Length: 266
Image 1: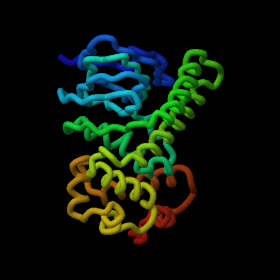
Image 2: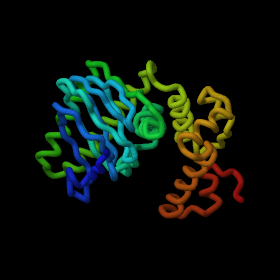
Image 3: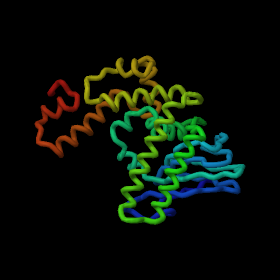
Image 4: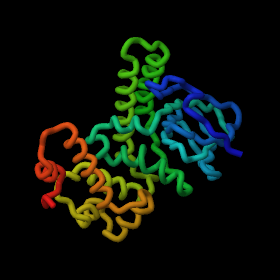
């Protein structure tokens, strides 16, 4: 039986809904679901069996993964198991700049893997080399100290360090080829290209070519993950950008349409 877990079990700070801690499990953990938050997990030591929607996989020191709110998970058979839990609202990822959102590693680790893990049996995860894990552990230690001491500006500092960690992990993911599900990386390539070029004239064929797959396969895997087409996703990004320009500038509708990649003013 699964239990529902809420972020306010860990923090009641509505202005900064964020929580970080070291975790260790000596016994099996009950299957649970995060109702209103996502969780970034870094395995710092030992190993365990990770149960995700009743599918089991082995996790060990150096593994990193993100669990979203719709996914049930638990740990079994832990051995010397130490992790860092970083719990955050999905909206926090909106602070990622366009350069980070356009990276394949970010799309794969923070967006696509959590979604795919919820929909299908899926074992892929980031595996950090031990030399890189030392740096990650150092960043985590600084973040936990910042969280506990709560000096002036700690929220800004934590948000900044979280984004620093997201960038570092995303870069490591891009250099990890072995064990990464091929459809996921094709899709990450496509989304990264769209995020980086949506203000330019872009065709479906161009996106497929950059993703190294056929147009048909691109449409199929895009709908499987996003329940929409690549071009509809691109149009949504353009419309979001147009809304921002309408609110924040004095540009005309025609000027905004050209700024957002619409070459036809109609």
